[in-house]
Structures are given as C-alpha cells and as structure tokens.
Image (cartoon, rainbow, N blue to C red; front, side, top):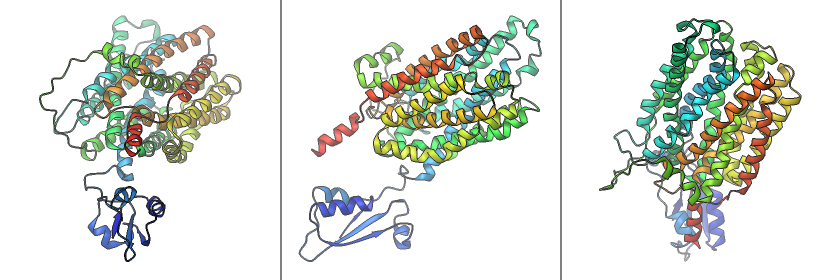
Length: 495
C-alpha cells in the first residue's frame, strides 16, 4: 500500500499512465478524523493505493515520487492559506503607509509649497531611497544570521521608525504653522528631513518583504501566495478611502493615525506570528563589502535579469506616475472634497478583493509574463481615459477601477517573475537589483510629471507618460522567458 500527499487527480493520472492496477481511495485530512489526528501538519488531500494480488507497488519512476513521499513536517507552512494571509498582513502595513505617501502627503505638502514640482520632489524621495536602501537591505539579508532569522530584524527596525516620522509629517502643519509666503529655509529643511527619514526606513521594510516571500513559498505556488497581498492591500485602501478620508474632512491628521494603527498591527504579526526557516550560518565565509556598481553589473551579465528589471521598472513607475497627483486632480480639477474623492475611487480596491486570488492562480498556470502584459494593457486604457473622458466623480470611479485592476494583475505577477530566475542563496541580491532599477525609473518619472503639471497648469497631460510606460511594459513583459533557472534544472533532471 502506498500513500501520496498531493493532488489526487495527478496521482491517479500517473498511476494509470504506468499501468498500475488496484484500489484507490481518496481522503481529505479535514474529513477523516484519524488521519487528521496523526498528520495535523498536512492540510493536503492524500491518496491511498492498494495494489491487486500479484501487482507489486512500483517504487521507481513516477510512483516513487507520488507514493513514497512523507507528509510535510510540522514546521513547513508553505501550503497553509492562513499563513499566506498572515504574510499578507505585512503588505497591509506597508500599503497603509504607501497610501499616505501617495494620497495625504501631497495634500499636506500643499500647505507649504505652491509649486507642483516641489511636491513631486518630496514624493520622489521615496524612489531615491528605493534604489539606494532596498538593494543594500535585500542583499545583506542573504548573509545575515540572527536568532530572529535573516529578514525579520530589518522589519523590527523599519516599521517603528517609519510610523514615528509619518505621524510627525501629519502634524507638520501644526508644528510649522507658517503661511506659504513666510516659510523659512530652516522649515523647508526640516520637512525634507522628515520625509527622508520616513521614506528611507519604509524602504528597509520594502526591501525585505519580497525575499521573505521567495524563501517562504516554493516557486510553483508563489503566485497564489502573492495574491493574498493585494487582498490585504485593497482592504486597507477601502478602510482608508471610505473611513479615514471621511474623517479627513474634519482633520487631515486622522488618515495618518489610521495608517499608523494598521502598520502597528502588521508589526505585531511580524513579531508574534511570522517565522523564518532556521538556517545555520555559513562556516568560514568572509562577507564581501557591498558595492552598488558590482551589484548593478549583474544586469549586463544576465539578460534575464535585465528584461525582468525593465518590466519591474515599468511596474513601479506606472502606479507612481498614475497616483502622484491623482488626489490633487480630484481636489483641484474635479473640485472634490476628501470624502467625495474617497467615495469615487473605492470601486477599484473592492474589485481587486475578488480578483486577486484568481489572478494569482492564473500566474501559476499560464505564466507571469502574460498576466503582467495584460495588466499594463489595462492600465494603458485607464491612462487614455483619464486624459480625455474623466470630468466628474463618476468618470474617476470607472477609471480608477480599471487602473486598480491592471495594477493588481502586474502586482501579483511581479514577485513570481522576479524570483523565477533567482538562484537559491541569491534571492535578496536579485530582488535588490530589480528594486534598484524599478526605483530609479520611478525617481526619474515623478519630477518629469511634476514639470509637465507646472507647465500645463493641470494634471491631465502627465498621464500621457503613463501610456508610453504601458507600451514599454507590454513589450518587455512579452520578451521575458516563462521558464526560469530552477524549472529548467528540474526538467533536465527528469529528462
């Protein structure tokens, strides 16, 4: 008798394919109490095979793989949807901070700056530290060994400092109560420092999240696992849009408080729930000094990395360009209050809640490149629409829904695509490399859109940049391979 802890249909097809005859029973650990008691750690269905008399149980080839496997260990959580949801809570905290960066900080900085270009520079500080801090943090995580793991200590530093300085930015109109004409150089320097520190430590956490996903979940289910993150992120969007932005009509500091509360919940999940696989420190290995130039040279040495970097760059530049002045577009062009603005763009996050898991499963089935290209095409349609057709809150609602759906598609696909070609032990280095290019692209795009907004005295023309970015993203995504180093090695071993 043999048992397989795998998809039952796959087991039955393999048994039929090699001519194995006998009685097959399919059981689920959730329904059969005896099995659940003995193997609580395995949430998967299992197949039991009893060969007929004279028919030996195959111990080689496909059946060895299927029927001689042991159930997962108690510490192996890679297939648990609850653990996928817990990991997504990290994204919930980061998304709440990103909401403040993209929506509230432009409104807050409007108290101090009349120039849209200066506001874009403030927001662009996030991109600056994205291609400085994130590559360093991701690469160092490959070699760091502590009793808390390789990645979690960076969260312990990043989250608390980010939340503290985010709250100080929210309080800045009270702390620096100056009209625009009376702003001193000292006040401007203080505002820059607050934003610099907040964005730098936010990138400490952002540079850690991606490698942690790749080291927690196997490549074959990474799309599914990644799909839980946009669910959490869009729940945050709904909470902030329909709750916090209503309160912003009374006081603009309320959204900052809501974001800080959500980030604190995420931090507690990291401390008490998230665990990393235990690994011994490499014996006698001398850690080389970090060199950003040597890191960037990987793009020249590996064309797969270069293609994925271009795709990732467009994937970050698109939301940066689309969302940079969206709140000011709603406020100044469409004359919406913060409450009305929140009610206008809630459709996108609500739609993403239902589409996230199917999108993740689609990535695992057809490949990340096609889902990524579809996401860019959808966002291109949204950018064209906002230039020509959005004149009221209803139009903004429709366009934001289309844009959010497109962003969901390439947001779910980017993590599996990045780590498709990463070798074990270099995941942080590869992730950092991609983040370097992504943040550099967004860093260049944001001031350009700010200059266009100042030159045209409006915000619509800047969305032409989004259309051009989407075209580049579609071409680059379709140019990448669908089979990475790991899968190629597995196919060669089977062949």
